[in-house]
Length: 53
Image 1 (cartoon, rainbow, N blue to C red):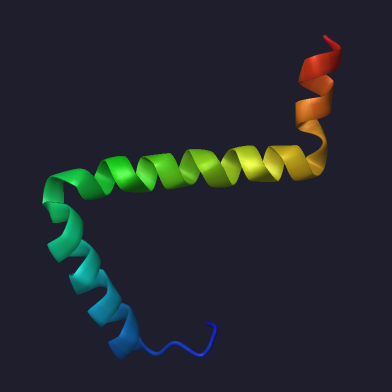
Image 2: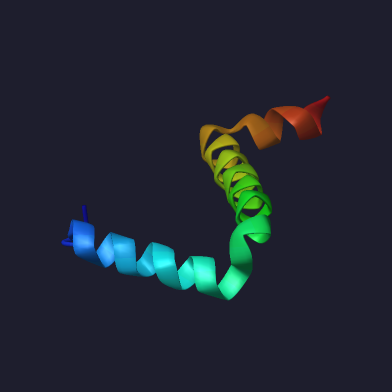
């Protein structure tokens, strides 16, 4: 995956945990998921359908 190994993923996860703390991570992932979903909807043209209604 993008030339990133398991060790690098673990280091990145630890840095994120240190920066945001354990309680903020679920909120961060929820916001990220909503952003990805809205991006995919926009790419599929669902945003245009909502505007026409």
